[in-house]
Image (tube, rainbow, N blue to C red; front, side, top):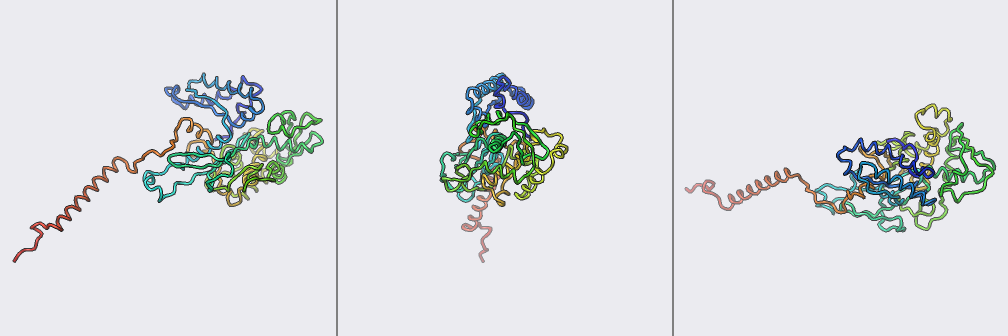
Length: 429
């Protein structure tokens, strides 16, 4: 599972007619995988996430044009197109949680356990951590039943069990938009168009359009008049300084609840294990911090980031010639941002960090929100557990035969004891 290449459909706001082309490769691949005789009966849905949510906030008319362009493309495909829409951040978090728990088998219990609900505990669910370019989500089942913030609470009934789930989606806190926000905050004290940035490697340079920086709803509040049209970013490669600037993005000054993550958003105490996927996995996997058997301790992750960020750009570029420059140049920022988000934003400690598993796939399926979206739309997860036989048909037959033999043996034994046949009586003298 590789990091996605190219922009999402929201990236075509300036060339709406090209938005449909972004799906071409995906559709061609689907036609190869799905047998041709099943094309017409295979449903296709499109769910757009944070990039389109931001575009809709900025210009709803353009967002609808982009959505219409991709809808037309999907209608012309050989598949059974069922619709396209922009999903909410809450839905995105919930579908990610459903996906990983469905793939891990957390929702189901064996047939025997269905008959002993009070004597056994159902397998604990796993929390979901999702990170994209424009938003990030945290979703899990907290210990406390009652939520202090109903807008962050969802109720599911799956396979006969009820789940009260906490979820929140932070729009603008995906790794790409977070970088934008950091840059515009850094610009507030800039007197020239040159910015020394510790989140890029020493020797790396980049020109960024001021107009593009402020084009996102995430940075609109920081907009100011500047004497220069471009920002010239020069890397200095310092993890600690980079972390300090990133942590300024998380407002921890006020909390109207018993506990918050950041920006005054309610967060119950973290509970259980978590699966971290999408950009969480892509970045940590690149940095060799996503070992499936045992995740690297937090201190080791920080040490790895310090060493990676301090490497000169020329050395990094020579070591990874196959990686596109845009992605390679931002791994120092992205890795530092992930650690800061999980540690400072969500409050994972040295101990609870070990409960995070960075997931690319579960079995042969991708970890992410899309499978949960499809499962929901196609009603593949029932609210109630179907009646399952603890034994197979052959097992039942064998058990019935054995029970019959035992019963017959017991009757014979009782008859022999209470009405002894003549052959078993003692002889009369």
